[in-house]
Image: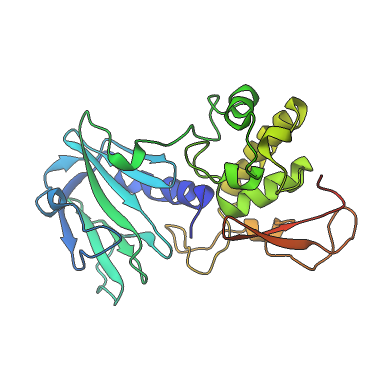
Length: 269
C-alpha cells in the first residue's frame, strides 16, 4: 500500500490544481469502500478548497465547512483530469471543480476511504496517532521515552502509529539498516546514541523517498500518472537473499508483526 512518501508525493501533485478552487460537486459511483463514503460528501458544493494537507497516510482537503479525508488504502490512486474522460471500471469518485477540473479516485480493491471532518473537530482516525516523522516533534528524546523499557521489537514499534505515523514497512526496513540496528532488537535495549542515529535515518530515508517521487509499487501512481523512483535505491527491502550493499553477505528475512523484514545479520546489531 502507499506509504507516507507516496501519499506526500500525491499531495504535492494534486495541491496546485485544487487549492483556491471551488468544489462544484462530488460524483460518487461506488460508496462501499473500507468505510461507507461520508454522507456529507453527497451534497458538498460551492465551497472553496483552502488547503491540501497530509496527516499520517491520509490526505485532507480543507474547506471552511470542514475537511474531506482521503485514504488511498491498498490500491487507490488519485489523478487530475483537465479534460473530460469516461470513468473506467474502478474509478469510484470524481471531485468536480467549478473550472471543469476533476480529481478522480481509482481503487480496484476498495480499501481506501472518503471521510468527512467537520470544522473544529478531530476525526476518530486521528485520535491516537503519534507525531509526524519529519517534524521537530519526532526527535531522539521523544523516541527514547516511547521505547524505554519495551521488549517489543524496534521494527514493530516503528510501525505503530501511536509511536510515530507513516513510517511503514518499507521505510522501517531501510531506516534500521541505515542506522545499523537489528529489526528484532528490543526497543528498550537500544542506547540513546543509537536512537538518535535511528531518528536521523528515518528522516533521511523518508525525505529521500519524497524527493525521488515515491517508491515504485505496482498499485501506486503519482497524480501525473508517473510512478515513483525510490525503489531503485532500496538497500534491504525486497532484497532477501541478495548481497548486502555494505558487506556482501546474503540478506536475511524474518516476519515481524506479520510483515516480512529484510536485514543484514552482519551490519545490523
